[in-house]
Image (cartoon, rainbow over all chains, first blue to last red):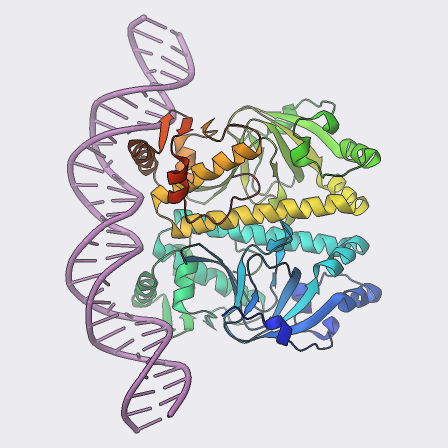
Length: 250
Length: 250
DNA sequence: GCATTGTTTTGATTTACATCAAAAAACATG
DNA sequence: CATGTTTTTTGATGTAAATCAAAACAATGC
């Protein structure tokens, strides 16, 4: 349960310039020297098995991570065992900024699947930020969009009814896939119903009913984790509250 | 309604080293030269009248602000006019980090009362961050606690019932006052019921009922905006879900 | 293959909260 | 201070979603 995967991790050579995600997690406009600085700073690539943790709340281990493959969820949990999922991180997303406040992580990060992440230690990160202003800007932007994403979620939880919440979620996942060059009409959900329900602040049963309702209304077609969007405009209309798609993650 | 207060603002000399809030918003451990750099970087002090806006969503005007007196609320609003309040900022709190993502603010900031803020432009901020590593660290920490605060609010909205939400809010406001050297047992709410209800994701009527209920149970005594906490331990017990008081703001 | 376990869906019932409506209190204005 | 306006509280009713319960379905292991 409390296994930290890092210890059993394989080190492997990092080559950001070859990575298919470079468009997403690299600051644009780095020259060769700067790119080399970054590549040397990346400490290692880490494998995490499904259900293992990347980090725990209060862990001192402070790094920034970039998801290369798989999926990670972050969550807060209460003394009495309830949890609130804060975000899902998919390939190209960065996580770990939560540790900025106190040099300790404020949430748990668990793999939803076998997952691969790049690790950049805070020390190296700090040094890089000192050397490369462009890197600093990029990081600020990353943190900013994390903040923005959480704000959108607050709006979702605070103001929307359950059907609207699901429509908003599906709509932004679709946008996200489009941005990444994948299909915006057909995709797999990276998480179980249980986790999605928790993230959206409702009971699993309610979530299931909302999926069924959207399906009855011919807006989507679902089987297991595969979602096909049949009527995008009506979906967007339902998700109508949404201000603007958040830049990153979910 | 859409008045930007900045234009009518008075410039005034800034003297951070004299400011009673320096403990809160200054990075600790600045030497004289560094402190002077900071004071010169602070562009001006701004007065905002009650109900005026400090900034609007999508405003390019990008600065970091420190509240000196009064109170500010930030909120997101939807096409159909509903809003979600994201935070309340009281003296000593910093705001404006939301603009990091896209160089534009992602939310509105409105004064709940006549308010005084210090303004630090992003340009100066960037320059300072380059020059003073300690400043960078401090800012990272500030953003981190903003992130943490929003996470706690997500937990509140996603998992707690209404009574628990109010108890959590009162409990953390009390903690906050204690940290600032004010009474933790008796204080004024800086916002109207309407705003607090929205922030906590419930109807005004429900909030009012919860105040009444806590009063009936002899846990608190309220008259208008004045709250006295009569039984702190039972209040904390109700707010039991809460993980840890957030560092800053509400 | 079948049994076991976990996940998802569907149905019946309860409930916490929203909504509607109006009184009471606080605040503002001439 | 009397009057209108806004804010807050209280009461009655309706409803969206939680909970309880169980069936259907997928995944896992033997």
